[in-house]
Image (cartoon, rainbow, N blue to C red; front, side, top):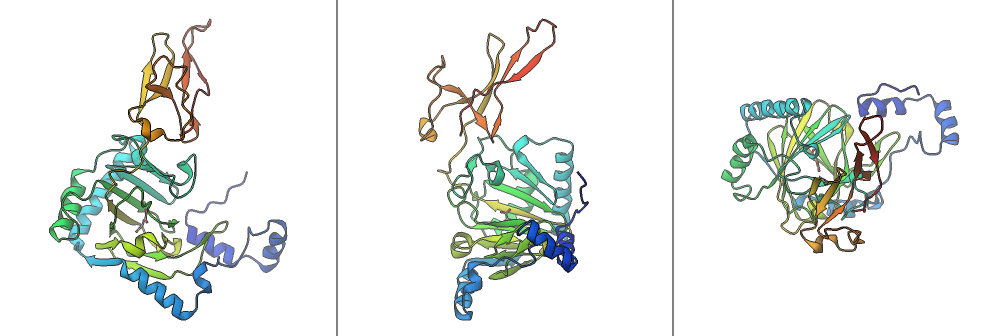
Length: 340
Ligand SMILES: O=C(O)CCC(=O)C(=O)O
C-alpha cells in the first residue's frame, strides 16, 4: 500500500484544505465524510454570545497560571527531559513507563494508567491504574528541579505529587479532548511547559481523517516555564486538548498529579513456571473486591488465589511445550484468559 509521508498534522491540515475542488467533491460522494472540509461543531457553537461568555468565565475560574521557572531553570530541566528520551530509546524503562505515538511520546513515572485504545472496555470511567511498580519511579531530578520549587512557592502542598508524566510533542502533535479521569486523579492538575510556547484549548470537538478541531471556548497560552493549575469547572466540566496547530516546534510538558487513594488498579501480574514446565502469566488475587462483576474463572485452578488473565486485549497466557520431537522449543498461545 502506498503511504503518504506526513510527519506533521499541520501539513495534513494544509493539504486537505488545499485539495482541488473537483477531487474533494468526488471523494465526498465516494467516501462520505473523509474529505469533509468543514470543522466539526461543538455544543458551544450553538451558544449565544452571552452564554459563551458565561462559559468562558466558568472555565477561567478553575485556571491558575504562574511563570515560575526561569529560562535557565527551563534549560536545565529540558536537558533532563532529553536524557529521559535517550534512556527510553535504549530501552531502559519499564514497558508501561513509555507510550509512543508518531507525534508525541508520553513517559509515566510514579503511576501509570490504562487509557484510550489501551482499554479493553473503552470510555470515561474505565481507566485503571497499573499495578504498583509497573512504571518507573519519579526521577529524583523531577522532585528536585520541578516539584520542590512548586511546593516552596506554595503552589502545591509537600508530598502532594505521586504521579509525573512527561509529554514530548513534535511539531503538529496533539492530545485529543479529554477530562483527566476524576476517579483516578485528585485536583488540581498541575503542569509545567518546556521548550516552546503552546496552548491548551477548552471545549473542542475533534473530527478525524482529516483531523479537524472545532472552535475552542478558550485557548490558554502555555509559555515555557509557566505553571498551570486546573481545578473545579476547568478540570471537571469541560474537556481540554492540545490542537495540532498549537504545537509549532518541539514542546514538552510535565504533568504533576496526585493519584487518589481509592483509584481502581489492575492486579499485579506474576510469571509462574509450574513443575510441568507450562509457563503462564497469572494475577495474585489479593483483593477480591477489585474484581467486582468479573466472572471468577479460577474455580478449576488448584490455587484459588491465582488466575490467568488477558491484558490490553492481547492474550498473553502462553504454554511452552519444550518436549517436541524435533527437540526445538515451541511456544503456543492458548486463550486461557479472562477479561479485565
Ligand atoms: O500538553 C498539555 O499541556 C496537556 C496534556 C494533557 O492534557 C494530558 O496529557 O492529559
